[in-house]
Length: 471
Image 1 (cartoon, helix red, strand yellow):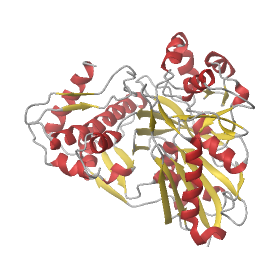
Image 2 (image 1 turned 30 degrees about the vertical axis):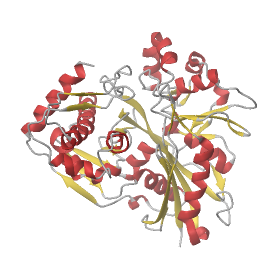
Image 3 (image 1 turned 45 degrees about the vertical axis):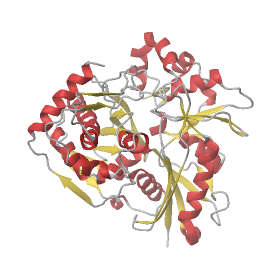
């Protein structure tokens, strides 16, 4: 038997999947890591903890099948920014949700058009450029300093090589989408040395060889690396222009493949690279949401309203139809398509009868409405109808949310029955590159939700839009 090990290093934890010769998941393991939040609201992750978890989940997942592993794929939380030297991390990673680089981005406001023109990204502390700059200014440095997203840190730990892939590079706000190179002028503006950035390799290239710290009997190639949203796009089979997916995770990524030519957004979306494979790049338009399904975690962990996140959709379905509560989860500002980093979370229009069920419904609506706003922006930017949405992530199993998404978006939602598409996409890419799979391995079971006319949803979205204007 030949197998492929895929590692997904995500915001909440680290997962590993073992895929058989048909691309089916035959083993999985997961470990959470700490969410380090200080009094300033800075959000960080301990890279040493993450690395130990990578080894733990890999060992648990591989089990007695170590000799069968022929390739390793990596998917990662994208904009989370790392700084290290030959000895290891110089600081905790700055998580993508963290806006500590806001002052740095604000100071570069006169160059916002230049940044967007070259990188396809709106000037924002969301992206690594400002995070790298903050780390450089606020960290005691020694030795050869390396800056990278989590993929490059893991590739370095696994293989000793300092590489990233095109999908992750395109999200740093330092990579020119036209020349497909690090942009030296932008690096100077942010104060980030070009020599501190990793070499960019094709997403299906060989990044090096690893035995996973002795877990495997011999070294195998790391030959599939993608940012988590890009990996999910690949796993969903969105390989042609016009196909799109939504990942329902801590945050959400709404991503459309737009083909082999750069498309500039006029509606607050980001242009990026889906990947570079077989020597060719594919571009995407994308809208990212800071807090989507994380709002359900907030209801559960911080407010104590739920015992399990799966209860949210069930309770929402039982909410009072006349309740008009609107929840805007701007806990760290609003990202695409609004770009209001100064906004703060709010619950509006509550009445005395608003209770747990109504708050659950407002939370579920906040997820669906943010995504619907991005879908509208995609339609405006591309002229495409976007009549079908492929959904993945944990909340793709929430039938209430999926039907709500179909109703508010006017698009059929195809919810994947495989919740962990990011590691699956990276694993399949690695397997294809290593000759374990053919292209047609990309398939999977889905549940279809067809849009319905729903007057309450129309009214609720109108209230949502009015409430956004108040922030």
